[in-house]
Length: 430
Figure 1 (cartoon, rainbow, N blue to C red):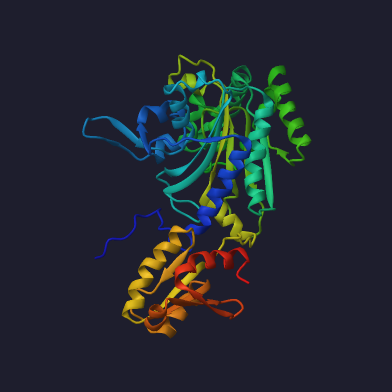
Figure 2 (figure 1 turned 90 degrees about the vertical axis):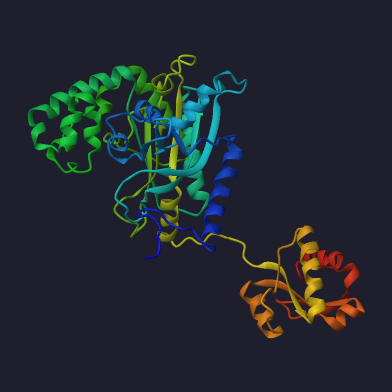
C-alpha cells in the first residue's frame, strides 16, 4: 500500500501556494506599516513552556498537544500556538531592554494540535500572529485590533464581525471567579467531566465548553462586565473609544472568554458572517495577557504587559472563498523560448539564463517537442512573448519575438536581444 499524507494535514500544490504567498505578503506589508518585525521561533519547545503559558486547564494542554521525549529524556512539544514561544524568546533574549518600546513582533508558521479534522481545521495549520510587549496603553489594544481588521479588509473581505469583551484585572477576575463557582456548583453534576474538573481550578473555562454550551446555566451565568472594578472599566471604555475613533465597528459580548488561560482585560474575536461559511465562524482571536511573562518565569521582567492575536491562514482562505473574493495574483511569464534544431536548442539554455539573470520570468522546452507543441506550452504558461530561434536564425544571429497579445512579430539581432526585450517590456509589450 502506498504511503499517504497523515490525517489532518494537507499538501499545498502549485496553483494554491500562490494564494498563500499573496496573503503572507499582504500581512507582512501591513506589519511593515505598523512597524511590527518578524520573529521566528522553534517548531518545538520544552513542554513546560505550554503548561505554564497556555494553562494546564485548557483543552490544548489536556487533549491536543503533540508531546514526546527526545533521546535525552527531555519533554518536548510541537508548538500548539505562538504567543508562549514569542514571550519566552522576548525574555530569553532580553528584548525588554530594547531602546524602542513596546517590542512589536509578528510570526507566520505551522502549529500543531491533535483535534478532530473538519472543514477549515487541521492538525497541522498555519497561523499568522502579532505580539506587542511592554505597553499597558489601551491605544495599543486598538492598534492590534485595527491591524487584524486591516489584513482582512485589504484582502477583500467585507462580511466581518468584531466581538470584544473585557476579562478585567486580577481583582476583577477573582470576584467573577467566585461568583461563577457559586453559580455552577449546585448543578455541576449536570455538566461534562471537563467542566466539573474546572469548577475549582478555572471556572471561566466552563463558559468556553463546547459540549455544554446550550445548558440553561450558561445563559444566566454572571457576566464579567458586572465585576469589573473602576480601573478595568475605564480601561475597557478607552479601548472602545479608540475603536470608535478609528471607525471600526464592534459588538460587546460578555460571554467571550477565549480558550487560553493567559488572557486578561481586552479579549476579542473576528468572525465571518458570510453565508455558507460554516458553523465555526471565528477567523481570528486574541487579547491582552499582562503577567504571562511572569508565569513563564520572567523574573527579569515582572508584570510585562502584552497583547496579540493569531489568525488561521486556512480559515482566511475559506472566508475568501465564501465571499467569492478573487485575489489579484499575477499569472503568466515574460517570455517562452521556442527552438528549432539542435544548435538553437542548445543556445536557448544560455539565452534563458541571461534573460533570467536580467530579471525576467522565462521558460523553454525540455521535452524535444515540435514547434506547435512548444507554442501550446507557451499558451498554457500565459507567456507575454515568445522568442523563436531556429538553426538558420542562429547562424544569421537573429531571433524573432512575437507579442502574444497583439500577434505582432519583430526580428531582432541576437547580440542585443536582451536590451531590446527590456525596451519591449518597458513599453508594456506594445
